[in-house]
Structure formats: C-alpha cells, structure tokens
Image (cartoon, rainbow, N blue to C red; front, side, top):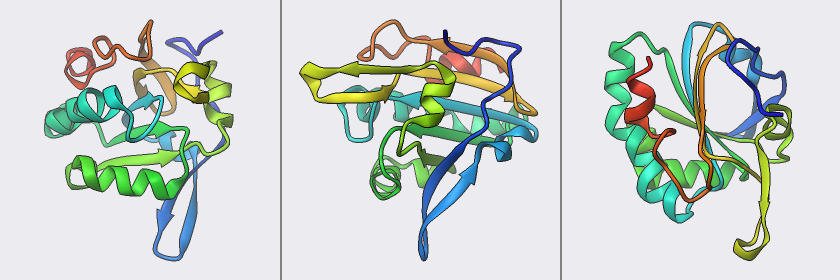
Length: 161
C-alpha cells in the first residue's frame, strides 16, 4: 500500500553527487519545515524531462512564497545521472534538489515502486507529488500512469500548498 496523508515519510538514505563523490542525504533531513517532494520514473525520460520537472522549475519561486523551505525530486537513478539531469533541466538553477534513491529502498518504503519491462524500467518510482510538514505527509497525489503528469505537476501541488 502507498503512503497516505497523515503518515510519516519513511526513514532511509538518498544520495547526491558532491564535490568528493556521492554524499548521503538521510530522509530525516526532510523532517524539518515544509517540503515539496515529487518522485518520477527516471531522469532523461520523456514525461519526466518534458513535463514533470519543468512544472516544478516554473513554480519553484511560488512554492517558496508559500513557505516551502525545500523542493526535492526523488528518482531511482544514480547520483551522477541526477546531477547531470538537474543541470540540463534547470532544476539546479531553480533550487530544486534532485536526490537519487539508487537502490530503490525509499521508493519501496513509500509503496510507490513499479516495473515497466517494455520500457526497460525496473524498480522505478511512480510519479507523485507531496507536501510534507515536519516529516509528515500533508498531501500526496499519485498518477495512475507513469506517462501522465497532471495531479503530480508543480501547478497542481502548488494549489494545495
């Protein structure tokens, strides 16, 4: 079962590319203040690159105006792919953290993992968007299809912030 509003974001470790290699980012860091987090099937994939990430790049400043302290993208990729994708999409410039769930453990703990063998995707994250308050899920929207980006788009989540 997928994580629901009112539940705590699961404990685990994500990764980011640092100056000296991969750096661990405990999910406990997401337990302070208001955080917008969105997950997606993979960096450099069509809907993720052309719709989902751009929707958060467009709305990043509006989230901050509403008191959101961090905007985080979670994807089952390695931290080096995440860093390159963040640069190429404008996420870095917009202040969006793209964090790698390299082994998919956080995605599984969220109950949001899926496989799409025809597309070569295994153990990926369903497309979602959520608002956290001190580590507890306030709102979560999960797409029915990995190719859809409507209820999980930045604009849709912003309306609930």
